[in-house]
Image (tube, rainbow, N blue to C red; front, side, top):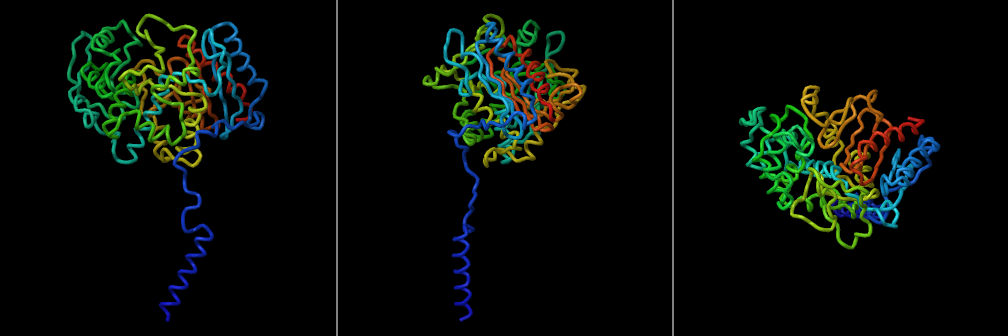
Length: 428
């Protein structure tokens, strides 16, 4: 009798629980952010701490650059506390075009690919499939016997292993030849095939392993093909092509449907193009055709995206690895990415470092001293060679996305964006 009563009581409690929704998670996390719902949530600029008159300085500046013919168009988005205080497209998508720049215009974001690949790598770290402190040779065996360039043009075997985290922090010893194209090591890299795009990510990494390092791994910061090699490591650790892993682990869950290494021809009407193609020199062919794939999936610079799409990624970073209930990274994983991997010695020994008061983590530049930089301490960011840029400033709970196709004005826009935004931020 007691058994029967207990069973009836248990059944009654279960029925009540189900009626109250306790029998299954009522608020289970979604597997994907709805791509049809815009990531741009407008907010009142004044309520978000901005002086609208000063924001207009940014608006007027970009309109003037379009009117003068410096750029065909651009898109600037500024926000705080998860809401957007300023968003506007300027000009048209390319010379001779009439289509205006919008949050759906597709831009080559170049090196803003690097943070996406780095985040993808960290999802594998969380699963125990990738070890930050392991030698790269654990995943790419050809990196076991690296050599280092010497001043006299000879090479010597490297005495330190290249670690996975060296790839993510640009302390690997690899280079980008275009930064100093006339140096002997850059010329050796050019002859060795640095500029090829007819290889897969894995094949490209294998080729780079045959070229001499600029420095011993872990001793100097040199902006480089490190993230291209990381892309090959990710493929090995994840067991799938890089584009598939990025789509499954980052862009797909975030609803970033316009972010990819290559775009379908059907989207050509939304492609942004530059005023100046910058023909000749080591960056010949920089502005590749979005819709004509090559075998190389460049983890260092091959992705294109829109302002609305990339904002999803930025808001995930601002949300400590989560956006609209979809978690990409654990907060502690993102915190690890924001630890400075450089030292004064590493920074001084390098080349092309982001600037004074800066450090570099695992895929992002970092602001360490906001007496020397406008964004607050802890800001993490990166940019692309054609001028695209994003940052997340946790100190001021501020974020921005900027899209343009202008290699010539990239550095100028970095300075202007900081002045425009922080001059307008009157309530930090």
